[in-house]
Image (cartoon, rainbow, N blue to C red; front, top):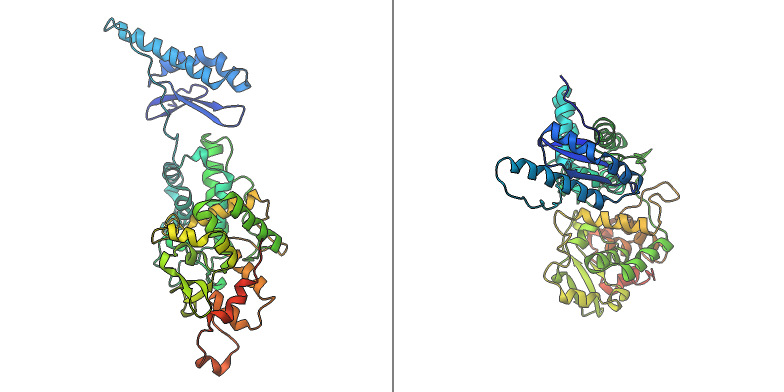
Length: 421
């Protein structure tokens, strides 16, 4: 037998809550502080006229809060009067916990939808959910997850490596999200990207919105998976200037310097995020400050990167001096994916398209593409560029056996000619 329903209410842990959409699109939710159907129904009958006025915008949520508090207080006084002749104080209005967290929504989805899944399908769906939960957080309120959040997750998904090959097989999801410069042959395919989005849409749109009514609008609405396997693009010089201008005038702390270092070094995200004070060095021969990249994914990753004079003029050395050992502890560990999230937000604020004119995606790694593309216009030897960005020196034949790193003074022009101001 189906239980009776009261319009504009739902039950959580046996307690009745009133819930409805406000004119602004936000959700109003408040406890009726009773597990009794009769009492909840009586309260809702008394509150219905004002509830409709709030939905229309002619009464405020604050006034509605007061009405609920008053009615609940009166009910409690009447109940207590039959036992003790004392007056009860008005209960404080407490901020309610989320109606449902992301972790709770996923568990509920699996209970109701996963009964027919095979072991392989269940394992795959758990794998597809990992980036979403890792980036948004398991305790996030599902009602507060936005389309921007889903878009940022999908950008991260598109750049994940395949988990079935080494060295990625044994990595955690946070380690996978922190991978930089993944070879194109190692990136997950378009089909896998579509499957990630498919489970997200099923959870938010079909389950939480259409079936359960917990959401009034799905954050996956308007999100499209990529139509092809096209990968990274570069930002135009004007777009790079916009990023740099924003970093100088609109960002502070770690975000400011991470953006500027991405723009003026061509270094990988992980190389910048994990920089320490001891990696900012001075070369006596060239009389230049440089970043010492000690190691990385290949032997060529260990290198010196000249620090552009613009960064010094903007106070980078003072920032380093005032820092502790790690320059960017906020993003140097498992929180490295935050860099991509913040860069996406900046890109949207600057109205810079996600796709370039060649339909290629632009992400954090695109700063590296942009530096390499710009420097290729003035380099006098490709090996100089390859050394600065940490690529293997090619086209040197047998000479490569005898060739060591170029002095810093020889490769400085690769960085010095960058001008994003």
